Image (cartoon, one colour):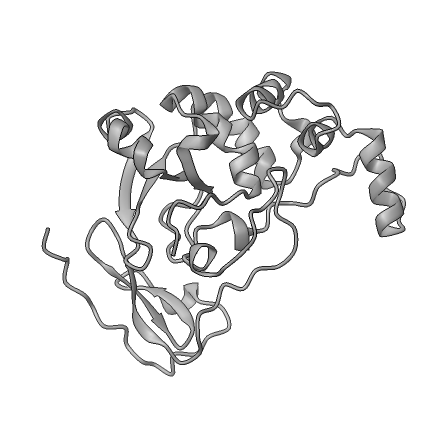
Length: 244
């Protein structure tokens, strides 16, 4: 698998710029940006980054010494570090609006920051049109969808967590390069049926397992946290931290 592919989801477009100045990064430095991890809820509400190797090799010390840095960990089948960061205080409001899919309500200065970060100068770019509820895009969507969009409706869908939470399937499955403005549609987050194996490891050494096609985090999984799955009172085994 080509581990240097870049995942262009909505978080890459609308959230990554929040860390641009803080980390001194550009879009081309980052493989992927997420707002959570499909395998654990520990990092929900944070920004997760995977860097391109060249950038990481030269800047790892400054990254982990940044005041926004929280933790890093590795998923075994992907074999690249995932870095977890706090949302900058001045972007908490914008982050909440992103989760709600209210892109046009971003503060004006952050809208300009998004455009500058991605070097967007063309007003016909969909990112610009979404941020400013462009009438041309509205008309186009109304014709495509055969609906009448109200003035208070956004011109892009809410973030789909199938794309905005890290999953190794994003990198294992062959897929075309996604457009910068968004990722639309569904996602296949399931591996082959019947698998039961370790697919990742947390920074504290606990293992992440795939059991009956469900992704379970050892030591942290609780029955009441799992939806539509019956363990039939099977007790999850505990795992010892891996030796460093």
